[in-house]
Image 1 (cartoon, rainbow, N blue to C red):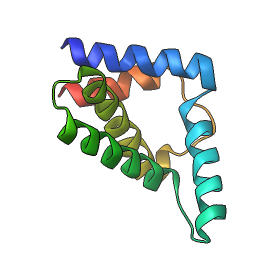
Image 2 (image 1 turned 30 degrees about the horizontal axis):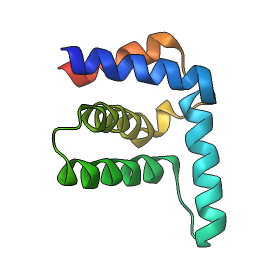
Image 3 (image 1 turned 90 degrees about the vertical axis):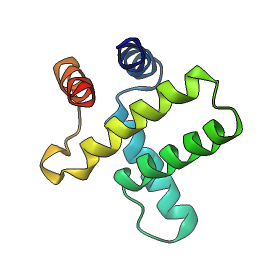
Image 4 (image 1 turned 60 degrees about the horizontal axis):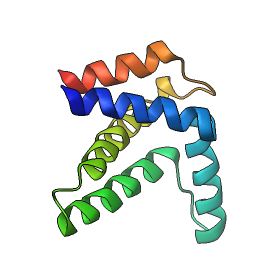
Amino acid sequence: MKILDDAKEIISERGSDYGGFVESFNRASAIASTLSGKDITSYDVAVVMMAVKQARINNDPMKYDSWVDLIAYCGFASYFASPSQRKSKITDEEVDFIMGKLRE
């Protein structure tokens, strides 16, 4: 499906711009934890980002980019949901695996 391929491409592009998503979500969770005074995990960050995208989709369901981003955030959430998958770096093969699971 084109939308899944687009989500994978965005993950790769943003990884080049901002570093790997694991590091990015770990930084975001550390910042959110500091600001809120609560323990916010990388999984929590992914779920909140899913909620943001869903709110945007509710406002404009025709905005394709929001759907692509939502798919990517769903993939990130599924990755962080499994403690055995938490590691410092993710490979291109792992991105392919996550996107493949989304296709099933």
